[in-house]
Image (cartoon, rainbow, N blue to C red; front, side):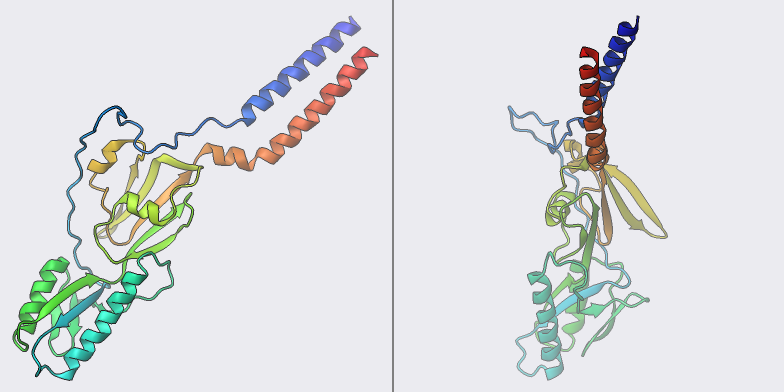
Length: 270
């Protein structure tokens, strides 16, 4: 009877060790983007229509005005030179992290931009193309055949969570997608939850919060596929991350159980 108890104890100890070992192994993670696509044929996927972002209060605009008018006052040339330098600097640091200060023309709380030699213009609520035409028409009153460029100088996207380089990124272009932003951040880590990406977007006096699935090709047809200024992306860690953090503790438990099993085996033989 005593020998039977010993064998039963050994059996339960071995079974418990096996369960711990199995539970310590994380489940395989789906790390393939758009895994629902058929790899044997060309897939035709509808893509969301890009909507031009509108200029808002506190935006910083790079406004470049050029003219062939040799009689143009020095103020215009100085302003153009300064703004062009700002635009160039922003382009060279298209993936710069938070801390770089964007320079240009600030859109004030009334939606106006004060342009030297031209005066205040209300640009809030317009696209950059519409703003360019408004600035060009205003500049044409004073200068001959002016050429105007208007761009965002502080178009920012924030990426947090399980990515290689979480940060706030300033981009010189406005047509940026979720995949572009993830690429800037160095892609998701192996622990990033690809089927549950959180996107937060300012919408008036509230925030829109949506979940995106990188494993599904339907993402490209989503109205949130193209990002807007000040969007925030958060990549949630998977359960495998928690398992990895607990790995040292699980290993210690496993070693302790193995030693106990070995001792019990030796005692049973004697």
